Each structure stands twice: as structure tokens, then as C-alpha cells.
Length: 555
Image (cartoon, rainbow, N blue to C red; front, top):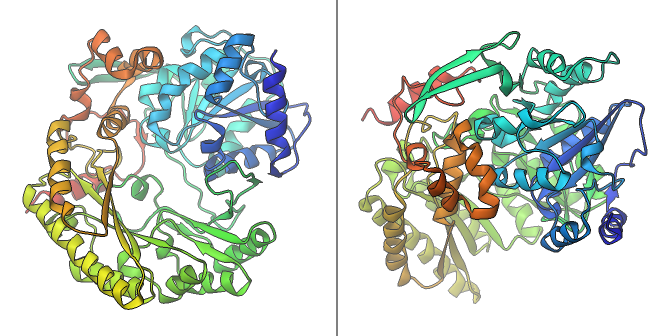
């Protein structure tokens, strides 16, 4: 065992401020694993929330583990040390349950690395009863768990607050039962998906049949927490080694009431639920005792009723406010004033569609006048650095739509320049341009992603069109990374061999050697009557998705 790694983990723990660490319990031992590095994991409020929920049970111990940093990977290999948990530096394979928390599909590629470090087979069928149960949850798996289904004993489809109590009652039984029987009991817990109880056959690029084995249900219900005024979702562990080291995070709402047709968060977290003003203010008071800045978290923070009052309250309490982005059609002047007082240098807005036609297509429900009015409000408050989010490659997009985007950016830029001259300081318009990625459980789940060469052409077109505008800068998500995300979002169990080999060979080389036609998942338009890999998840809104798809393309 490497004392170098043990010493590093102890130093990390010494820098954390948060909940007390349990030394031991007589019950169930979980190792909650984030399949990326510590910095990314501890920036994830959901990961912290699940860790806190599990440790809230007296008969449950939950520790954490992560994908090691690069230098630590070398030390693990050199020393022959098995992957260790952070809290007790115990080998991960010695826990009762390994629970993966997966927010992003790209982290699927790190799963085989973690299994190898733990000394365990990646595939569930190859693990025996001496090894821990392996479960997983998180936003990526709410959408489509099939690409990693072969790796997991069971998968949680829904929010932990509602799902975990019933699952833990099954896992903490005292009687000794064989693994298959335990999984059978898990399979009937609402929100729990046991892949081995579902047999899939394929026909070409699609699914031919899905056979359900007893006692599993034909569909798995997605669970959501109906009591958002119960236990709060806030920062429970504070550390300097995180993206939000300077702030205390408070979730104000979950879900989004808008229903933009491309956005998964607007559907998998339905219905929209917000916490009461009183409960949020109480958490703000607690947070300000630890940090001077409060980060308000939610898919639609601007839609929180009383957001202006809340932001002003934070400032009056001597704190500062932070939000990721603002909704264009509901800018609250009190919120904007609070952001200015809090020292915000850049404010983010999301027009998404470059033209009015595309904004209507995606159901953004905003027009150019509203966009410019929002910019005027911010600029009038002397907030001269604006970040605008746009999507390219949306279904039916043409170069004419890009021309409208360029013209809109030019109008925003002119306003920034005029205000900057009057105030005698610089302002900037930053464009964050990302390709459209079709996501499960959205009305656009049936639409294919645009060809990469076509997207590259559009990027060059935008760069040329915007190149003559001073004080305008464009940043672009990597197109190949976006393609991989689309592949893992829309794929099925046949991607498991690719994921297993991607770490050593790279996913593109692995796909070539395995003769996997990745375009059949990424670029293919899917008919409405085809069985989708994720159709076994009952989200209760399939008819709504079909209706919104038809409305989008009916004109």
C-alpha cells in the first residue's frame, strides 16, 4: 500500500470543512464514487447531497472515492495499491456497496479505469458474491443508463431523497441471501433498474425486443422528490480544491417550468418545484457563517418567485450573490442590482437560437426585442461584459439563421461599445457556441446530430462573420467531444465493449476495431414508433414529448 497516497488523502481531508466523519457502523458500508477527479466531484452539489443523505442513516457508513489525479494514477500503478477511499483509505473493493454518481456521459469512459484500480471486473456478470454490489445514479443515468448497464448490478432512476429509503430497507436486511435473490428484491423497489432482469435483442440500429424477467416490472418509474421543503440541498463539505471554493451553494428549486424542446433538465426533473422563501433564507443565514458569497443553484434560478427579494436579503446580510445565468424574459432589477454589488463582472444570457425561427422551433418563447431589452437593462447598470449562449446545428438550421445570429450579436455589441465609451472603460461580448446534442426524454430525442464537417463549416462561417467585430469573442465546445456525448446519450448496451477499450485505445480507434457504426446512434433520425433504448423508463410524459415534436415541425 502506498503511504504517499495515504498521506495525500489525509491532507485533503484536513483541508475539508463539513460534516463529521463516521469512523464505523455495524450496518451497511457504501463507497460513493464520482468517476472523475476530486475537483470535479466536490464541485457537484448532487454528489455532496447523496453523501450527506446516506450518512444521515445511523446504520449506514458512506465514504468517497474518485478517479485519481494523473500523478496518483502513476503511484497506484507503481505501488500496486488498490483504489482507496478518501475517508479511511480503505480499499474500495472491501465496501459492501460501490455507488457511482454520474452526472456526465463522458465520465462513462472512466468507469473501466476505476474498476481496474479497484481490482474488480468491469462487467457485473463476471463479479462474484465476494465482491461489492455495484449501483449507480445521477443525471446521466436518469436519461439513458443502457451504455453502462452491463457494468452495474442495479441503477437508481430518480432523485435520491425519495428513492433511497425503500432501497436501503432491502439492502440492510440481516438475513443472508444469495446475490441473485437480493437483486430480485431490489428490482421491485420503485425507481430501481436491475439490467440483468431485462434481455434485449437488436435489429440493425434499433431494438427488436425487450424481455422482462420476473420479478422485475416491464417499466421502471422515474421518482422525484415531492417535498422540496424537506432536507435542503446545500454545500455540506467545503474545500478550497473545487470550482466553487469561494461560495456556499444553496439549491432554490429543482426542475424547470419552461420546457425548451432540446433541454433534458427541463424534462427529467419535472415537475418544477421550488423551496419556500423562508427555508431558503434560513439556509442562506447558515451559509453566510461559512462563506461570504452564496451561489443560488437551480435549472431556472430566475424563475424562483421572489428572486429579487432573496438576492437583496443576501446583500443586506452582508453577503454576495452568484448565479450561473439569467432568464432573458424575467430579469429582476433587484437581482441585477445585487449581482452588481456582489462584484459580478460578467452576466450570462441564453438566447440559444440564433434566429427567431429557431427560437420558436426550440420553444424558447423570447424574441429579439426581449433579448436586447435584457442587454439594455444590464448595460444600464454598468455591467458591460455579457456572455451569450447559442446552439448551432439545431434541426432545420440554415446559413440564414447564422446570419441572424451574427446580426443580433452585432446589435448587442453596439450597445456595449456605446456604454463603454460613455463610462470610459472596456466591455466585451463573449459567445459560447455549442453544437446541438440530441438528448433522451426531450422532444428532440428523435432528431439526429448534424454531421461534424457541416458543423465545422458553420463554425468557420461564424468566425468569419464575427471576425470584424471588435470586443466580440467566440468560444466553442469541442465538436468531437460533443459527438461522443451524443453517442453515449443515445446508445445502448452494444457500446459496452467500446467503453471498455476506450481508455487504452481511444474511443474512435476502439469503434473502428469493433466495427461499430457510431453514426447509426449519433446522426440517425429516429421514427416516432421505434423502440428507444431508454423507453423502459416511465417518466409519464412520452405523449407530451411526441406532441411537442410534432408541434415543432408542423409549420
